[in-house]
Image (cartoon, rainbow, N blue to C red; front, side, top):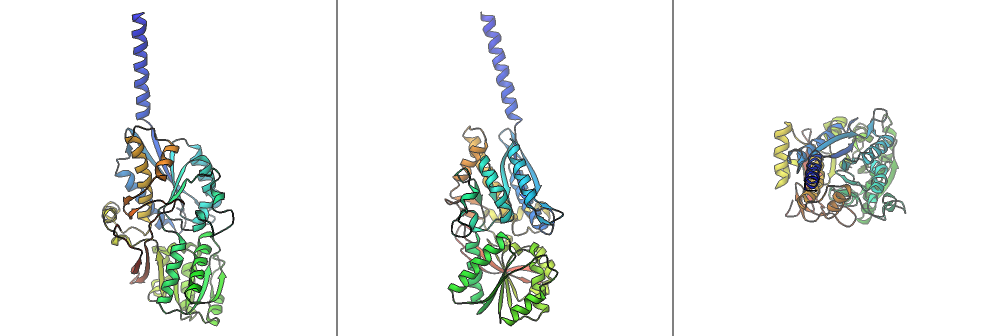
Amino acid sequence: MISTLTSTLANFALLCTLTVSAHAADTIKIVSSLPRTGSANAQTTSMVNGIKMAIAELGAKIGESTLVYEDWDDASPQKGNWDPTVEAQNADKAIADAEVMAYIGTYNSGAAKISMPKLNAAGLVMVSPANTAPNLTKTGFGEPNEPAVYRPSGKINYFRVVPTDDVQGAVAADYAKELGATKVFVLNDREVYGMGVAAVFEKRAKEIGLTVVGTDGIDYKAANFKSLVTKMKQAGADLVYFGGTTQTNAGQIAKDIVSGGLKAKLIVPDGCYEKAFIESAGAKALEGRCFITFGGVEAKALKGKGAEFYANYKKTYGGEPEGYAVYGYESAKVVLSAMQKLHAAGTAITRAGVLAEVSKTKGFTGALGTWSFDENGDTTNRVMSVNTVVAGEFATVKVSGLDAGQ
């Protein structure tokens, strides 16, 4: 009997050892879904670099588990931009891989609409470093079924570390008035993000006494917008607002405004806050006449942990980060912090656990200052900057909503 008991205990000990060893070899995956094909590549490469930095700071480990990061493209060569089919495939792939504990993305708000309900039903946390369309999380900005349609489980699994367009569009309109504009023409690219931010700008412009002399949705695949410029001249516009991105031809609009002789300022949102916009428009078409809003401040102006991020980024990659690099970094840091809390509590790192911890994020002190996720999954950070182009580089002209933690 003793011999049998001894043998049983030995086998149990061996089983425990094997179980611990198996746990030690566990892999925890974090994936991102961003447009890596097309002109957004420079911006998203910078964001991916930020994610990699956050993981490297932990030695790519949570306890004995190995952190593995996979950089997924949600764009296609055919579109040269994000592709609904590819984004859907990425979401499905993440759901099917039991090792995936977090999904960082998307870059485009339209892409988020594709993956949000899928990931929500699967209980997989999604943290966006760049989506700004308010209707993804708030009522009153889109269709009657938004945002409920993105939450089939009835719970929130989607979070974002960037301020939304109901803040950005209003800041842009207020700045238009500061510039002395009286007659504004509002354009959008007919995409979710562009239409949303343009609508907020238009609403705020009317509230503060600006005259909206025209609105239009463009075909962003058009070779040029010369006829549209003629229309804006005839309307007497002294400022043009374009709700869109570099990828939806903001650069061509800027060039045509200049070549068409329209003496109007141009304001564009954060989808154009990337070097690719300056390259596509040409600095001469932007300097002294174009202003770009951005949710946050330029990387070199970050304070505290943000300043540390900036210095480490330059040291690691040998160059300046694009505007959204720090948001990729912060997204990863939030997810990793949740995993670390689970490990410290001796709790298994599961999708449900990570989601629960991310949802509790309050008073998070990171590279973007001190902030929390609100009841919608949105950041409480409201810092916005207005930028222009000087000598071929972005330069900040105004910052609003700055607090002591930034």
